[in-house]
Image (tube, rainbow, N blue to C red; front, side, top):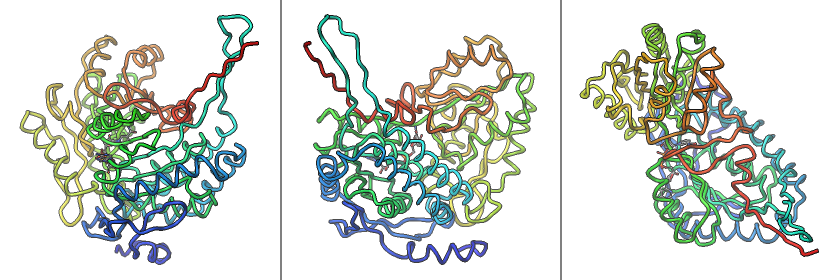
Length: 497
Ligand code: NAD
């Protein structure tokens, strides 16, 4: 392990990292039926540093039964909303208190810089949980004015029931805790299957769920592979809703599998988001903003601004600025205090991303900076800027999910044509506009087909703001009122007066 790591964190987490973790069902730690474990690899070294249970269909069944029992009986269904909110706050407090350990372990698990893991991963999560706690007592129905006189109708928002959550590896812990917070706030119970590449965030979360005193069966965590564990969760007849974050390919499979039981499904999928920089933009902010929207977390961000369109008047200046940032970014293990960008998650992901860079080169793109991996151990790739790209190239059409940005000059001022460029993709997750002209900003934002449009930096991932995608970037929304309502059923009650 790295010499610069704070020794106290190393010793505080040593026993956690040395054991083979079990499954968390009904607030108990249980062995998986298979008796097998997943080797967890530190992407900065390529070496195994922890082990987590490889859960399967039988374990999922056990977890679903625990979640069903907790949903139907016990303290959860009759708990006053304010008490549910207090439990979510307790969980948030526990997350905050453990922020250093969480940051340290997430950095090993996923490779991201430790400070990012601590602030975005742990402290950001505590904030989001507290936001969600506020919803517990505010999930209201309505009183529609009926078409017929002498009738009274009102609606209730019932919790949807047992929720199956499946998460990817790019933001472990935060992604899982968000799903936990929303499920608890809406009164549901949950079975969570985290990504097999990064199971430790969810295991940490399970320990905090236990510490916060959340009743047994409300939150259950089954680590394991997509097939069999994720698959069994999607196919389970007693799961009412699947909330999935991951690739579009898996999302499509989930839709087909969920059809057998007509489960409700929310999908948060991939993206190929455009960034537009207009000549009047504040370039001092736009350049680092555009760069970090695709280099942060080694580009493994669903909302990465991976297609960079810059007005021809400032194109050279912006490409030079973004390339300069790419050159200066300190790439290294997340536990080194000065690292700004960690490794990619796996050898497979490294090969996938370098494959895209090669395909860009073959199709005529110019590598302005980066393009190669870093020598030595781990899955490090230098931040890469490609120019002379074209809409027909694979690098411009497919999600790369790595630190690679494709820059294109924009010699147009016609917003309809610019919007057409933005929408020239099967995805529709996010878009970025950098301009000081309110007219450009509002007109273009309306024309773009994306779930989120960020202007001059925008809102980031604020828990109050609905998040999700148009087109093949997903179904439905998480966060804010939309996220809560996505975990409810509307019941209409009609009375003849
Ligand atoms: P993935 O689809 O390969 O895996 C995601 C999860 O699905 C994992 O837990 C995996 O075990 C599970 N899974 C795989 N096959 C399954 C199956 N047949 N049934 C049930 N579960 C199954 O995605 P990934 O590579 O882990 O994540 C990267 C993708 O996630 C990218 O496309 C990225 O854009 C997307 N993502 C989207 C958002 C968003 O909010 N829109 C956020 C983060 C990541």
